[in-house]
Length: 138
Image 1 (tube, helix red, strand yellow):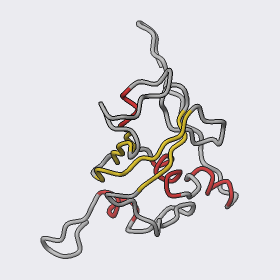
Image 2: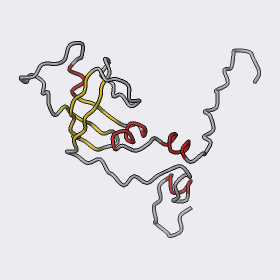
Image 3: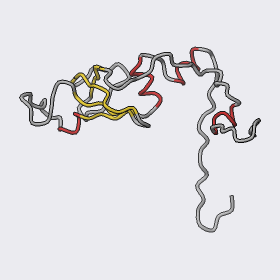
Image 4: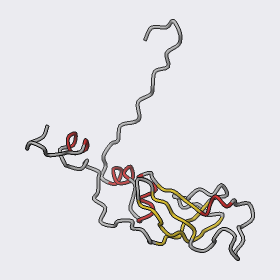
């Protein structure tokens, strides 16, 4: 698998050969620590990606860019002068983003499935897992 002795390759490079899938797009925009986003939230405090009417919207600043991106409210601080909107808990002051669809939403790019649809590529459906009952042969 390795061309040169001691060369390290990621699993993605080994499987895909360093190429992107046909519907993949290289992201030119990177999310960095300190970036500011205005996030629309629903009543449960989840980020709205589908364009529906938000219950509340606020500004969040990126504080960590590890495997999950962590964003903290840039407007409301715990115990500060601003109070929480009615019906929302203090847990909405910190948002975490890790899914590819949410990351694409944050930087204003279409998700992989939308990009594939735009290019008229068919994404195979997720296989249905067989449910095995006790004493039954598959």
